[in-house]
Image (tube, rainbow, N blue to C red; front, top):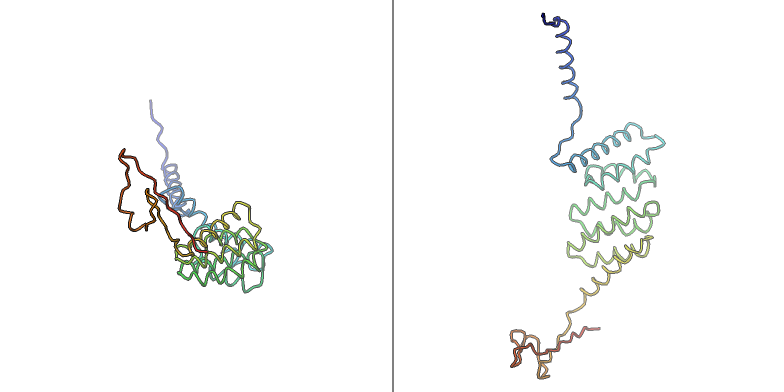
Length: 235
């Protein structure tokens, strides 16, 4: 039985097709990442870059405001503030308001990244009062981030400022309102002087905490005797 041998032209067509397919695969954009999260994050950043190109090519488009919103949202979510900062500043100069809250949040996050916490707070306070009406959620997220960064910078005074203005201005969900209230109370407690500690030992003799803290009070039976401690907070 004779085997069918493809003609030279057929083989050449197959080889040419395989080469073309390989070149096409090489030409396709690839997303590099070691984990699924990294792959998906890289795709979102690519989407942001594509929308930036759309804005640059169609500055007068009817939906350009929504395009800015998308860019700033993705930049805030994926730590791309430095890249879109010039775009945010240009947008704010235009006077458009559709995405102004997110644009200011871009500026605030960039200041935080540079360690300029006080300047970031100074920018946040008027933003949340006068430029957050269209996007209170973005302002709230920015405020919580800023308060956390102020705490890390050992600036409880700035954290308190941020929390107070958020409770005053933003329509916070009750859960977030309680979070602000809790933070404010903790800060106020931390800023108070340390309480005086008076101690009464098991014989009801007054003593200082320092004089007894290294001692153990046991009765003959080996049970721990009572020691009364009171904390006297200054008014």
